[in-house]
Structures are given as structure tokens and as C-alpha cells.
Image 1 (cartoon, rainbow, N blue to C red):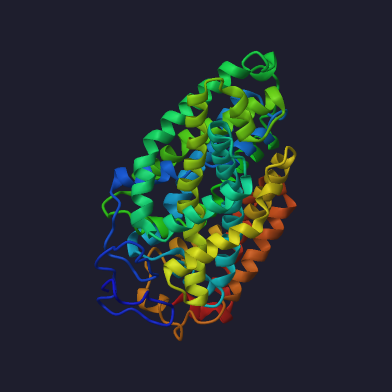
Image 2 (image 1 turned 180 degrees about the vertical axis):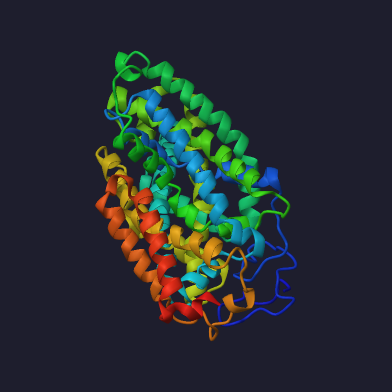
Length: 456
């Protein structure tokens, strides 16, 4: 498909030469993709740069008093390796066939039914988009107030959001270079921020931070789920990214790439949030680093890092997924859909999410949306590996009048079963949803005649 052709939609089944032949800036489509723009190093750096979530800071704050420092560190590490496995497993279809999440899900949910997991995935993305944009704007505002005496957070929030919208329109070509170039700056800044936190708040940290009893039981595993729950959204739509990675990487190496790219940022941000909240009770990262860094140039650099990190995280994690949903449901072009997603982020009231008491609220938010995303993840994995045996009929995935038309009731019922199980054990909602949802889907697909056409 040439760059001048319109993006392939669900109403346009592919023919033999529909794969994208040239990856122009902003020329994203739902078509099966043959041209891949990210090698292993580039793909690693993209995930590294895109995973500096301020939400991780809040999750670190939320486990203070429940886990000691060693337990919190292990919880983050375990969560990251579970993420790595889940990303490699669910991203295999996109990597093999070059299809995005909204196309991958059609074999399990049907053309119409796919809108449900798509919208469920899109909501937390838009909320995080607004939240992290507000944090980034707050950092820019503090730089402006310190250096120029101009203090107007609303102005910087609006300006910052439109900047991100402009970058998002560039598509994966822009994402690739933004993430790759920024990853070194991000790593160095995180190391410095960790050092500054220890130096500034070392005396205030309680002596029991390492030796307190904490818990190795349910609260510990709940903490691992909180840190992986931030990425449970990406575990669902990982095919949107894996379709950009050049072929030739085995699944075990992909697991390592995912886990090791996510671990450093998650570990630094989670532990910084943990230590700062334990010492001060403050959950606002802007105020934390304003107090932690006495040197003005270093403070400005740190604040600019916070702003930059929100851009790299948003354009990868929080723009692409809802954009593809809008492209599929409303048949919009990629640039138009990214603008709409950016505007929707204004409506999330992010200033309410950065209040001192917000860490507990964000913890509940992660647990709740993980309860909805976990069952969908389980269904996609069972569908691809057990029902389809890792073989998809691409022509059927793009044929709205074919066997996958409408809604697959087995997937909807399994989703509901998984959600009920997850909400019953809300502290470990993502884990609790997997087996009930996956097993229900498998049994219905094997034994319910109404679902037989979806097994084709």
C-alpha cells in the first residue's frame, strides 16, 4: 500500500499486496504490516523511554507501611518480569502477522465485539494521559516560575497538551526517534533523582525501613500486581508495538527485552516514591524534587526531565491504543484520531489525581481497571495459542461479513466471569481473573454450538 492510499479499515479486506510498503511519518493504518522500523536496540530503547510512569511513583507511595524496602524492591522486580512474559506472549500475534490489537481481538470477540475490549483499554489510557500531562505541565510551570517569574499552571497544561498532540500525529516514526534519543537522558536523570532523594531524605527515613516485618503474603503479591497493573493496559495492546519490531527475534529474547527495558525505570520511580512518602508523607513528585534538590540548575534539569518523561510515556502508552480504537470504530485517519485523544485528556480532571491523598485513589484505579483488562488478556492468549494454535487466517480478520462478524458471546461471558473473580479478590484482581476467564472461554468455544463459527 502506498502512502497516498487511505488507511485500511475493517470494511476493506486485504488483498495480497496490502501490507505497508513505506512507513511514512503519520501513515499508520490497521493493515497487516510488512515493513518494520525498529530493530532490537531501537525497540528496547522505545520501551525504556516509554515506561517512565509517574503512576509508578504513586504506587510506590501506596505500599508504605505495608512492605519494607526489600519487599517493595522484590515486588517491583517480580511485577516487571511478569510484564515481560505477558508482553511477549500476547504480542506474538502482532509480531508474526503485523496486525494491531484491534484486529487481533476480532477472532476472539468478533468485529462488533472487539469494540468492548478496545474501549475498556482506551479509558485508562486517556486518564493516564491527562494525569501525566498535568504532572509534566507542573514541572514546566515550576521551571518558568523559578527562572522567569511566570507562574500559570493552566497555561502550561494547555500548551504542553497541544505539544504532545503535535508529536503524536507523527506516528511511530516520531515515537521511535523521540524514545531512542531520550532514553539516555532519562536513565541518567533517574539515577540522579534517586541519589538526590537518598541524600536529601536519608535522615528522615525511619530506621525500620529495611528491617520492619512487612508482609510476604497477600499484601506482597498485591503490590506486585500494582506495579504490573500500570502496564496491564500495554499487555493488552502490545501487538500495536510488536508489529513495528523487525522479524528474527525469538520469544525468549523478546521477554528479556520487555522485562529489562521496563525494570530500571519502574524500580527507580517506585523506590523513589516509596522512600519519599515514608520520609515526608508527600506524593506529589514536583514538590518532592523541589525540596530534594538545592542546586537550581540541577533542579531545572530534573524538572525538565519529568516533563520530557511524560511526553515519551504518553505518546507510546497512552496515545496509540485509543487512537487505534477510534480508527477502527469510527474509521478515522491516524492524525485525526490522535488529536481527538489529546482533547479527551483535558476532560479527565487530572488536577484531582495529584492531591496528597491521591496515591490510595490511584491504587484503587489500577486494581479496578486491571480487573477488566486481565480477563481480556486471558481470552486473547487462549484464543491464539489453544484455539488457533498460533495460526490466524488474515483474510477472515479483515472480512466483516465473514465468520467473525458480530459478537462472540463466549468471549463476553468469559470476560464477565473473569471480572467477577477479579473483583472478588480485588487486591490481586489481574491475577485472579486469568484462570476463570481463560477456562470459561475455552470450554464455551469447544462445547457451545453458537460459537463454532468463531473457531474457523
